[in-house]
Length: 104
Image (tube, rainbow, N blue to C red; front, side):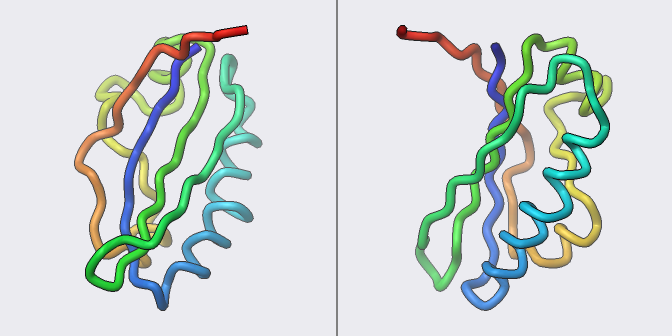
């Protein structure tokens, strides 16, 4: 299992709008694409410095090939829809990919 992790920061003012957009549109659209090997997503949110809110998105895929089906050949580049980009103050330049190690 592969975790695709990406960080984005928005203002406190836009945090609610951004979270709603992620939950109700962006992640829903990813799920509706029925990408073979896509296993779901999680959002982590915290108050950050400089009046910002940090959002971490974690997408789970069975294999790196499934990640590439989602993100394309240059799979480390983030996939940011225009409406999400407008709400972000800044974001990480690349997505990171980690092998998930199951404990149980």
